[in-house]
Image (cartoon, rainbow, N blue to C red; front, side):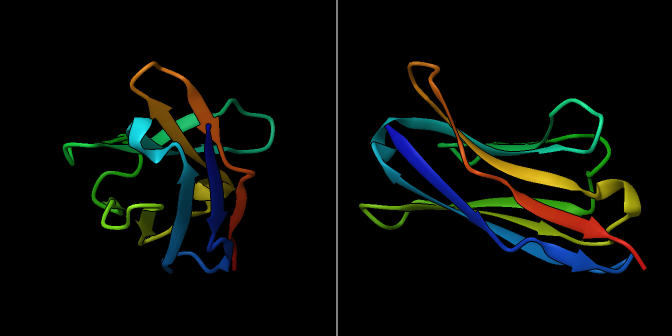
Length: 119
């Protein structure tokens, strides 16, 4: 099993920046893809960005050019996943979830971190 713990959410003004972090522990050697998803009130959870173990990235059109996903696999016992969010908009307000998918297509989720963009 993979355990995920997010941090870094908060309140930011439109146009501001935040960086989310996710620490993955447990069976990290089984992870193939890690990513960020978000869920706004009354909406379905949606993909924000993903990064594979080969560092291939994928972004939702709504965040391209503003968000950057990165992954640090340097430690033997923990992987770190980041989401740098710039030029934030009110529509980016949501609970952001870290996800890890194994080579066997098993998904693990973090508890979520709230991001609120408001003046």
